[in-house]
Each structure stands twice: as C-alpha cells, then as structure tokens.
Amino acid sequence: MALRARQFDTARQLASEALKSNRADRNAVMILAHAMIGQGRTEEAIAPLERVVRRNDDPEMETLLGHALCGARRTSDGIAQLRKTTARRPPYLPAFQELAGQLANTGEIGAAVAIMQEALALAPGNVDLQLDLGRLHLRNNNRSEARRVLAAARAAAPGRTDVLTELAWAQLRDGSYKEAADTYRHALGLRPDDLLSRANLAVCLMEMGERASGEAALRSVFRGRPHMLGRAALAMATSSRGRFFFRPSAAAKFFAREPERGATP
Image (cartoon, rainbow, N blue to C red):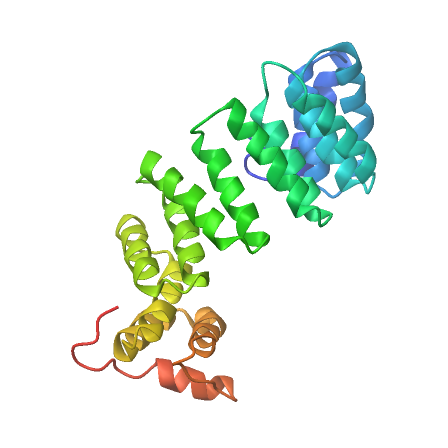
C-alpha cells in the first residue's frame, strides 16, 4: 500500500524489516527495489535483485534487474540481462517491452521495433504490444506502419482510449486530419476530460478549415484551467491556419473570449 501511494521511504523501511527475518522473501525484495528506484537510489537496488536472480528463475525479477542496471547507467549490462530474459520460453512479454524501451532510449529505434515485432510473433494480437510497436514506428517516423499497427489494435480493443489517441496522433502527423478528428472525437466520447486530445482535435479542425470550431475547442481546453494556456497557444501556433501570440497575456485574452455562435468543438 505504501508503494502504491508512492510513500517510497515507508515502503523501503517495511520491506527491509521483512527481509531481516527472511532474506529470501521475494516479494519484499521486489518492494524494496521498486522503493529504491522511486527514491532515485537505483544503484542500491541492484545487489538485492541480483541475489534473488541468482537463486531463482524469475523473469519478473530479471526484468526489474535489467531496468535497474540501465537506470544506474550500466546500460550494456542491463540490455544483456534483458536479452537473456527475452530468450526464455514461455516468453515473459514485459521483458520485451522493457528491452525495446531501453534500446529506444539509446537511439536504437530500429532494434527496438524488431524486438516488439518478435514479441508480437510470439503473442499475435496482443494489444499492449501493438500499442508499443505503433509508438515506436512513430518515433521512427514510419507513419504508415504506425497507422496499420494501431488500426489493428483499435479493431481488437475499440474501447481503449490510449489506442485511439495514439492512432489519432499518427493520423494527424500523416496529414489525415478528418480521420484524426473522427478518432479524437471517439476518444473524447469515452474520456471527455482528455485535454490533450481536445487540443489536438482543435489542430485537426483548423487544418480542415473549420477555424471557428477549432478555436472553440481550444477555448474549452483553457476555460477554468489557466495552467493550460501554454498548451492551447502551442496548438494554435502548430496549425498552418492558426495564429501566433507574442505575449501570454494576448493569448489569455483571446482564449477567454466567448466562442462564436455555431462553433462547436
């Protein structure tokens, strides 16, 4: 409970107490390691994880060890550990996701894509893997492949807003503004408080020539949320049919106006 509440110091102390009576308590080591990582003491989490990994075949602990090694700037050791874990059968899919993420962090996007494709070959139709692969394709600027993979994920899980928003972002980046707007509307129907999606919808609307509706969408993002001024102004400036503000006060004044009649986001 302390770990879930991000009370890392309390979680670490409780796990340490449990380990005094049983140094082989796997769950206590797991909690201890997560707490240390949360505290920014990642290097200290490595030794207890290594002790457990040496004694047991535990892909979850191995994956956490790989994550900790990479977090402690021992990236080559961490990636080597993760490659060893991904070679296990039956496959432990989070290890593939962790490895792909670490490879992407080092700039090896192509290698990360290959890892996720390998994982999908082992677990065809897994929506989480499709989502991760779609994101990697976008990072690699392969928009057509990103759209193909994410469209398959949407077909498999039409109610997942994370899939919908990622697909919509791929469509927007590919210049398919009408498709992106429709996908964002679907996502917003499921999660109306998603302000980032509403701001991106506004960009689509303005690119489609629906300037009044786009501006209305951005006003709804800003209204009552002054901290969203920067995001709304950025969305307006991003659109080729938008506008640029030289002063935050000018942007705030513009977004505080009443929307034009008939303009709906």
